[in-house]
Length: 471
Image (cartoon, rainbow, N blue to C red; front, side, top):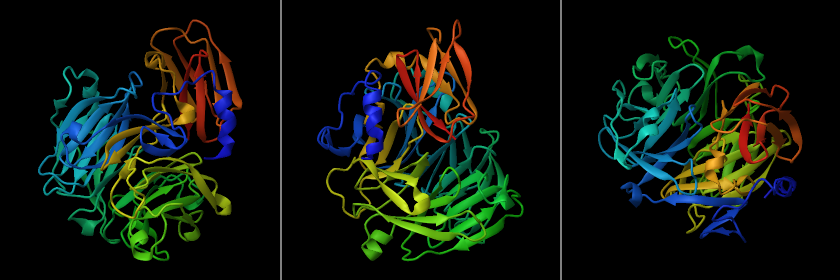
């Protein structure tokens, strides 16, 4: 675990108390760990499923409550994690057709969009605000809309800034992206597709805000295409343009990629290289400062032989679902100089760390609480950075909500009960970066334009601390 966070533990000793199962001597309730504690667990059997896969999350903008969305072989589970030690399995949206181990979920405008490789499945749309009023859990839900212009597909990618979804790995467009306008979530509209780069397994799509000025403001698609990477300008859905298409050494299976927040680098996971070449877990890093000319920057090898699956970046940390090694966190603060290092883990599959497809399929590191759902063959496991363990009084933590989170430039704090009196914001070194006092107010907009991107801790009224992600 990175020693630079140790001052934080002492600094916030008055704010935090350990939860029920902290990581002690490398173990939390039987799970190997380093710096990450167990909050709770729900087995596949408790969700009436025999297989688990993808996951995502939703934070209710109305009250800040957090929900985990867990992919299962036979549907999608919805779990209220507002009390992380006592999560509530609210119920399941059954698969649209047959069962399949492959299911993928993303969220846009308070709706979940769900695809599967099950034949004829299409895209299910579910209104997540229905989770506010579940009288008798677990319920069996029905879908609110269905998009049938696709059948079985491997994955779905959503650009929340533009309101477009991209289903990938299907039977049309040579397995490439199928464009869907979801700006009206309950009325998805086909918007074309792109076949020239072949099959895409997973992708990230953004309105580009990185260092290459040639593409500022363009909608750019970064695709992991099984045997190569493709960067495509999809701004004009009728005329997508390939910016670059490239290979890298020792390709096994080009599985999934994610960009650093400054867009300078892409971190790529290859799902086959551990089998094909005997590597330990390898993350391939590309320099993307020039999108027309990507450069291999660095190859990071972890301490285990397990297979990497899905990884995401928050600030200077890379959160990786590492199959048999569970959740692995990597410090990328010095990635520019070709340095990455382990920064903690929670192994949700304690049996071994072998190269296999057993264990953690996905992690979701974007909740303001710091709770991280881990999904896959072990069902639903909820972990948290031990320095972020909240007080046992969960109801006190729910009195305040931050929105939006992640935030850019400003965010709002709202209290559902007592007035706001004081807000202090700290960086992860324990340094206070903002200190504000208020009187007779239950909601305040706070200017954070002076803060760099990263993770911060917001202490409210000297009683409650929440995590804030600054973009």
